[in-house]
Structures are given as structure tokens and as C-alpha cells.
Amino acid sequence: MNTYSSSSNRPREASSFKLVAVFLLLALCTITMVPSAWSQESVATPSSESTEGGNASSALMLAAAGGSTLLYFPLKAVFAISGGIVGGLAYLFSGLDENSAKKVWNTTLYGTYIITPEHLQGDKPIRFLGVPDQADQATGQPAPEPNR
Image 1 (cartoon, rainbow, N blue to C red):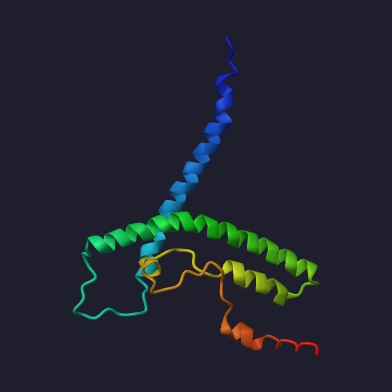
Image 2 (image 1 turned 180 degrees about the vertical axis):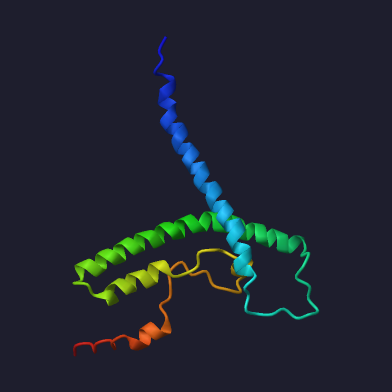
């Protein structure tokens, strides 16, 4: 009787357990953080429109947004973490030039992390790549003139 045959599945079981735990944690974060972000809308709805209760269409859009976020967020998070590391390396290898690091960080760390129904309806753009602030662009040095 071979007693070692059952132990070969343990690393596989542990890795699948970790994967399930990560997805459950991500789902919990999405469920708890998204409603609080939605409650901070800057546009007030007219008093004639009721936002309570909803209908089947809005429930379907919320479900689609939640499912889209579960697929989109891990990709964006990996991209952002990688950009943070690459930006740090750019900072080191450029002689501690913060502007070169910020170009990488602005592009990778900013952008859309959570897909909302407004994104799915086309009311708000989904920005995988971040857009730098206008204040950062105004204080930056002007572009050099091309050689003639």
C-alpha cells in the first residue's frame, strides 16, 4: 500500500483553495465598496424620479456591472501593481527623476477600477490607462522644438 499517493494532491488542493479564497475576498470587497461609491454621486436626481425599488432592467445592469468588475478588476490590479514597480525602477534608473516615474505611474495607477452601469450604458468611459491631471501637465516643461 502506497501512503504517498494521497499527498501528491495536497499542493493542488491548497492552490485551488487559495484561488477560491481570493475570488471570494474580491467579491466581498466589490459588494461592500461599490454601493458606498455609488451613494456619493454628484448629480442629484429629479424628485419625480424614484431611485428606490428599481426594476428588472436596473437589476440586470447591476448584475452585469458586478460580473464585469469581477473579470476586469484583477487585470487592472495586476497592471497597476506592475506599473508601480516599473515606475519605481524608472525612478531609480533615471537618476531619481520623479517626472519620469510619474509618467509611468499616472498611466498605470489611474483609471477605472470598478465597472458601473454608467460605464456599460456608455455614459462614462472605461479608462484602462490613466489620464494625467491637467495641473501636472501645466507645471511640466514644454515640449522641445523639433530639429529643423
